[in-house]
Image (cartoon, rainbow, N blue to C red; front, side, top):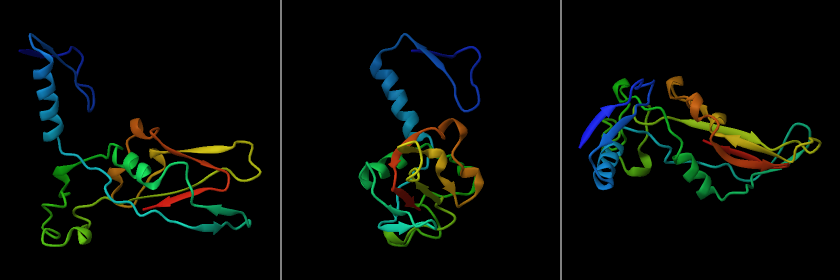
Length: 169
């Protein structure tokens, strides 16, 4: 197998490598090793707000969605979260503050990044029938270095119709 970096790369966070004299199995093994060895964060716990709310204009909003919560949680888990292991963030299974805690009790500023989202569908008098909610609508409660990167902000999460809202943290 021969590997060389393509001219003009790396660019930012991306690189391109040309592999020759190889087969698909070897390339797949390299891909799997890279995926396993690159540190990464993912959203793994979501608390959805449920119920009916009334806004200050008297409009009633319901927390129903075209997608089940489980599907939306899966989509959130797939968003690329900026990861900076050198900044002192620990993975929850190795966090010195949480290592001895039960799984549901784990989570401190050293091992978690917090996001929230509050979105509502179009108002009842709006011309559009729905609003798309994107990854860029997530608000970072933790350090701003974990804000969703610009190239990932247009990842669609769901759509909201008139009279619907979505809220979670």
